[in-house]
Length: 227
Image (cartoon, rainbow, N blue to C red; front, side):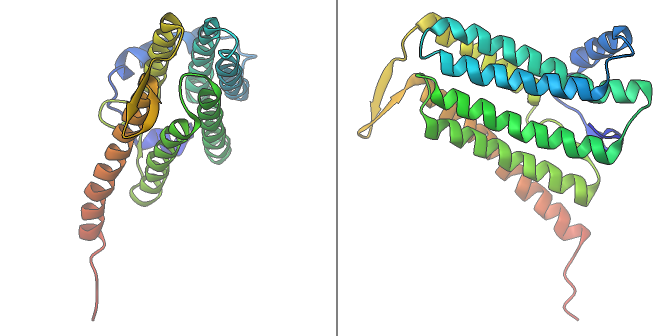
């Protein structure tokens, strides 16, 4: 994360207080040779592991554990790159912002595609979740530009909580072995399609709510002048 984001960050996720203490504890103990870019690359490597793990679940459900390991690696790298930079006072605001959020976008895309290739969630459902996530991400970036703050969580949920939900899903998928099916209005869904649709819908609703909330605020800040 960049310095600009740090100054205007808005926290509020469920796990943030505990997570912040843990990250600071880790950063203090990392060798000086480990740099923020190393952590960014590690976070992306975690996304690749998730992608591979989900594809391999077509061979055996045991690979859901590989995907879960990938989420842990992704959290470790993605959460520590900016924290290392801030703790050591080696921030590169423009570079950090550019690389971090581009890698984040590619990461979400990889995870969504990988999940869609698994036998438990259909591809269009995975894309629905990814698109909803991108919508709320775009909304976050717009707010940062216009209002100079970076909102890290919506409805008490942020990236870490989302990863945790996905890891719980992976555990459920593993123990069920085969995806149970349900027919709705002539369309076949797995139960996990419905979970994915539910997750995507929650994210989309949070986006719509935040959009109209900030739209009213912007209308007051920047009123029309027709004279």
